[in-house]
Amino acid sequence: MNITGRQIRAARGLLGWKMEELADKAGLTRITIRQTKHFYCI
Image (cartoon, rainbow, N blue to C red):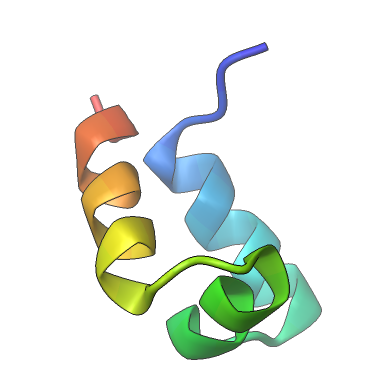
């Protein structure tokens, strides 16, 4: 299953999470989340 940058952004919006919160809960850095979001946003 592929997740797009738009889906990541929408999920964060529904949860009320900032990028930093998503990164913390996923065990990733904010930079990794940002790069992933831009990579999959087609």
